[in-house]
Image (cartoon, helix red, strand yellow):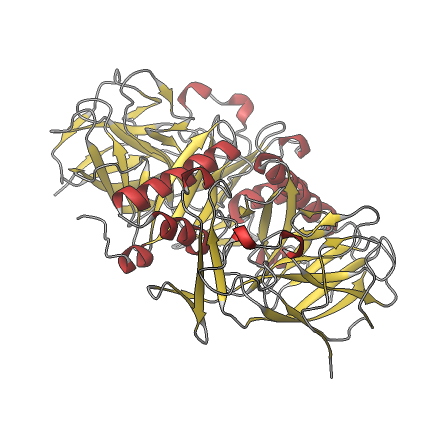
Length: 301
Length: 301
C-alpha cells in the first residue's frame, strides 16, 4: 500500500516556506503524479507560448514532508518507477534555447505515445526513457524557482534521473520538503531547444536518511555507475565543480589512492552535459561502479 | 596491397610547410604506424615527465600527400582499422589537467594489454576501444602544434575517432597533408587528467575527395550517427559552435525543416564533451542517422 499525490498538489519554488501537502515515513512508498512542465496547458498545436500562463510552469508535485529528517541529513531517494503517461508536447520558440537565434517561427507539436515510444509528427519513433527534469529538496533558506538547478537539486534535466536510480540530497530543513516533476518521455543530453518530450506521468519513490560521510550532493547512483551533478553559471564552471567533487568522492568516500582516482577518472570516467538552457548550466561526472568494486568499495545499502 | 608508414615518420605541427613523406592516390589504402603521445619515451614507472624531451610529444605520422586534392576540397578519411599494440602509459602530474590542483605527486604507470583490454595496476580491466587523439590536415596557412585542436582537426581527442568511422576535413593546401597519431587504447569523455591509455598502434585508412556542399568540418560519421566536432577557448563557446553547426547541417545539407531539426536535436541529439584539457576545449554534437533516414537523407557514398 502506498500513498498517492495527485498532480494538482504542485509547487513552483523549492523553499522552507512552502507548506507540505503530505507527511510520509522514511521507507514508505509514495506515488507522485506529475504534470508536464507547462502544467498541461499546451494540448493542441494551436496552444502556443503566447497564451501560456507562465506562473504555473515547471510545477513539482509536493512538497512531501519526510518524517525524522533534519537539516544536514543525507537523504537517499529511490526512484522505484518513473512512467510517462503522455501525450507529450514540444515547442520551438524564437530567441529561446541554445539555438534560439536560428528559430524564426513559434510552434507547438503534440507527440503520440505508443507503449514504449513517442512519435514525432508521425515520422520519427523515439524509444521512451522517462526521466524527471525537476527533483529536489528545500534549501535551508531562500526560494529557488523550479526553473533553476542547484545544490538542492531542482531543474537539473539529467537523463539518468529515471527508474532504478537513487538520488542523494543534503536535507536543508526539517522534513526535507521533497518534490519532483517536469517529466520527459525522452530527451537528449543538452536539452538544447529547452524541452524534451514533455509529458505527464508518475513517479513511485521512497526516501531514507542514510549515513555516508562527505558524499557530495546532488549525487546519483544506478546499477552501472555513480555520478555527481553540478550546476553553475557556465558549463566551464559546472564541469570543474563536477570533476573536483568526483575526485573528493573517490578519494575521501571510496578511499581510492589519489593518483589512481585521477587516472581512472580520465580512463573510465566521463564528463557529460545534462542541460545548457536553464538559468544555470548542469554537468555530471559519471564513474563506473565496477571500478569502485575493484577497489573494494560499494555504496552502503 | 597497401603502403605503410613507420612511426619514425612523424611531424609535430600541421602546416603547409611540412614536407610530405609519402604520396598516395585517392582511395588507396595506407597503414600508418603511430607512436603514443610521448613518442615512446616513457617505458617504465621510473620514466617521468621531468626527463621528457617535450619537443617530440604529440607526434603524428605523416604528412601524407593525397593526389588530386586542392584547397577547399572536402576530404573524407575512412578509418578502416584502428588498432592499439600496447603497452599503454598514463601519467599523473601536479598542476596539469582539469584537477591538477589536487594532484601532489608525479607518477607514471604502464598498463599491460590483453587481446581486448588494458589492465591498470593489475587491478582494473578496461575494454579496449582504440581511438586516435590527433587527426587532421594542414591548414591553409600558419602552423598549428599537434597539441591543439581546431578547424583542421588536430588534437580533438574524440573517442568516436575509431575503426569504422569516417572523418571529413576541408582541405587547406594541395595534397591535404594528412596525418594522425596520439592513439588511446581507452579514454573517457573529457580526458580529464590529460591522458587516456596512451599507446602505440596503427591505423589503416583511405581518403577521397567527395562533394557534399556546406558540410561543416571537422565532421564525423559512423554506422549509428553523424557528429560535428568544434573547438574553442571555452567549453561554452565550443558547445555553441557545435550546436549551431549541427543545425546548419540538418537544415542546409540534410534538408530538414528548421523547427523539426531543432526539436529533434533536443529530443534525439546529444551534446558531448571530447576533451577539456588541451589549449582549446573540444565538444561534439551527435545526431542519429536513423532520424536522417526518416527524413529521406543519407550521407552520400
